[in-house]
Image 1 (cartoon, helix red, strand yellow):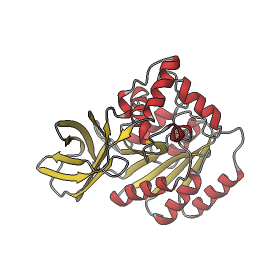
Image 2 (cartoon, rainbow, N blue to C red):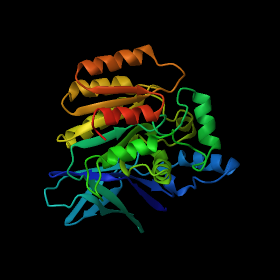
Image 3 (spheres, rainbow, N blue to C red):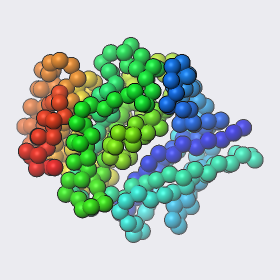
Image 4 (tube, rainbow, N blue to C red):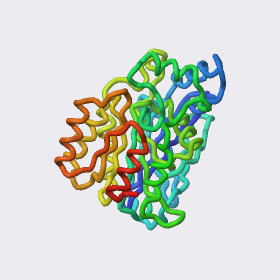
Length: 320
């Protein structure tokens, strides 16, 4: 039996370290090429969702002087939440994770983030926030996933300059504000999202996605279902770095406005601004109402169809 490990970008503060990933039989989803064309692309996407996680596998983390063991859950997922109060330079740091079952073993290396000193953190949705995905139209979204490879997928105009400006705001050369991409897309699509962000020059980020899927039925409903996991992940990020003020980026195609209202009510002193992209021809009255409620809590909001408007708003309130 062949083993494979998929690691995701972890993160650390002055007291705790978080590292997570999956273990699979045969290949992880990222081993399938995402730049194929035609039916070969559709076949690669299908294979991303027909993977075989390994449960109850023993996993070992090595980072600096740390050497710790844990087990995978039923879906092959593992997570290390460890006390860590050693001095660590700000920036990205390498760690390694290994797994051995019988005579088969594998070692993979990943990265974790120690944020630079700053006042700002940015948490962004992905689909229809910076990646054009058509999430309001199930069949169109499915068609795009199956027929358009990474070279044909697009970002919204001016979203990259906005994100880069937020990343650099208040920082010296070579330093950056921390970005987190939190989405209802599944872990199966992690490598696609990673490579897409890199291809378009979006800020390097910790990426948090939804539970991994393992079959055809799961694939057909990718990105659908409840969004409470996003609220939990955002809450965990803010609690992990409570010294930061956060900019929340989302869109009006699903539940982002309502989720961000809940977050604001829980962390009223930690939210600096909220940006919601308009994905249809007209602004939605319910979204406008939610944003007005958020404004009443003292948080700046911007409901925009064009990222140029969002950039102007960020300049106006002094965050870029």
